[in-house]
Image 1 (cartoon, rainbow, N blue to C red):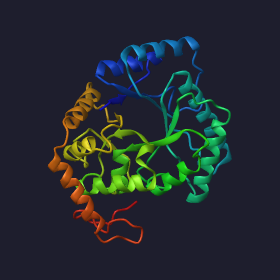
Image 2: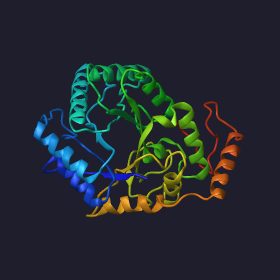
Image 3: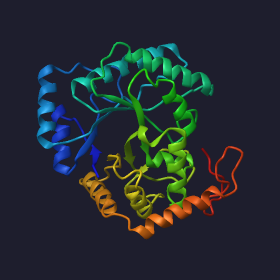
Image 4: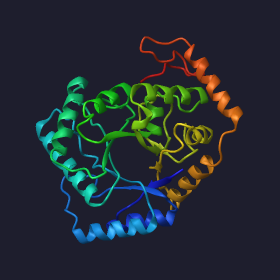
Length: 321
C-alpha cells in the first residue's frame, strides 16, 4: 500500500517533497500555488527541475496536486467561470511542468440549484481549460463531495455523468474522499455498507476510474452533508471501519493520502502511521467469505425507489445519496 499526506510548499516547492519523505510517505499531495488566490506566479524551469530531482531522489509516487479552492467550473456567473477556466488551465500547466500524476479538482457548485445546467457547464469549462494541452501522463481527478448546499458530486450517479461528459476528450478519473462519502450518506462505516458502496461505485463509475483515496475521518455524523475532517480513528467513521477500507481487496492497491487536521506538531506523521498500522496484513479466507456473504445478503434487502438500501444497520434515516 502506498500512502502519504498533503504537505506544504512553504519556502520552496521542493520542500513539499522533503517534508513528505521526512514524515515517511511513499506518495504525497501538495498545492502548486496559493490555493485561495486567483493569481499565481509562473514556476521557473530551474524550480521545476529542482523539484523533480528531489522528488525522484525520495522515490515519491504518485504526486497529486490539489487545485485552487476558488475554482468553480460549474459557476453560473460568467466572470467566476472565466476566472476558474483560466486558473485551472494554469493548474494543469504547472502540474505538467512538475511531472505530477494527478490534479485533484472539486466539481464546483450550481449555486442557483440548477444542477443539470451546472454539470453541463462544468464539462464545457473543463474542456475549455484543457484545450490544446498535452497531458504527458497527467490525469484530472474529480473529487466526490459531502453534498452541502448546491455543491455537485456527492452521488456516484452525478459523478458518473460528470466523468462521462469528458470521456475520450481528456484523461480523467475519480478521487474518493472517505469523509465526504460518509457525510453524503454512503455507509462505509459498517462492513455491509462498505461492500454495498464499493459495488455501487463499480456499477455506476467503475473501480478502474478510482486512482486516489483521500483518507479522512469525519467530525460530523453519518449523512450530515457537512465536510469536516478528523484524525484517523477519532471521528465518526472510526478505526475499525478504516481497517476494513484499507484492507478491502478492491481498494487496498489504490494510493491513500491523508488530509487530516494538524492540531499539534507531528499530527500528519501520526495519521500516516495509523493508516499504515490499520492497513497492515491480509484478510484471511474466512473474512473474505464473510464479506462476500454479506454482499449477497445485501442484494436481497428492500430497496428504495432510487435503488438504495432502505435502512443501514439501525441508521435513523434512509441512505441519502
